[in-house]
Image (cartoon, rainbow, N blue to C red; front, side, top):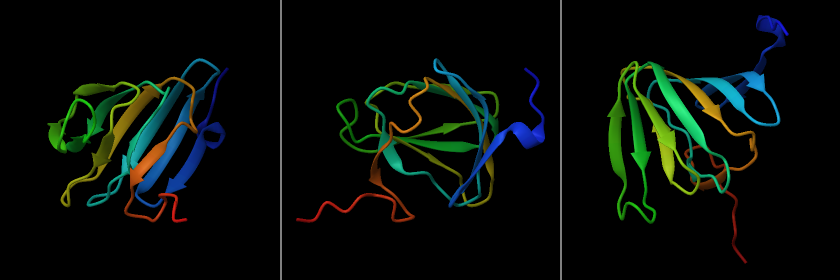
Amino acid sequence: MLKTEKDILYIDKPWGYERIWALTDKYVAKYIFIESGHKLSRQYHEKKDETIYVLAGPLCLELGPDDDHDEVVTIGLVVGEAFHVKPGVVHRFCAPEEYNVELIEVSTSELSDVVRLEDDYNRVPDFKA
C-alpha cells in the first residue's frame, strides 16, 4: 500500500521527532531526527529488538551501565554505520552540540516497551513512597 507524507505518522518529541513509516504486528520502521545538543532517555527494552542506521550525524551512542558495561561507554557512529541494540541493553542516543542527527530504526513491534532510567525532559516515573 502506498503511503504519502500525510499518511506517515509524525510524533513530536522534546528532543526532535519521529516518523513511523512502517508499522506491522511483526516490525516497525522509524525515521528519527535528534536536534543538536539533545538526547533521548537512557533506557532499555525488555522485548524490543532494534537496529539503527545513521543517515546524518555523527551519533553519540551511550551504552550501559548494565550487565555488559559497569560504566557508561560512548561510541561514535558516523553516516552509513549501523548498530544492533538487543533487549536488555541500556542505551541512549545523543546528538552533539554542533550536529543534528538523523537515523533509521527498524525494530520489533513493541513500541511501548521502554524502561526509562534517566531523562532530560522529566519523563522518568517518580517511584517515591
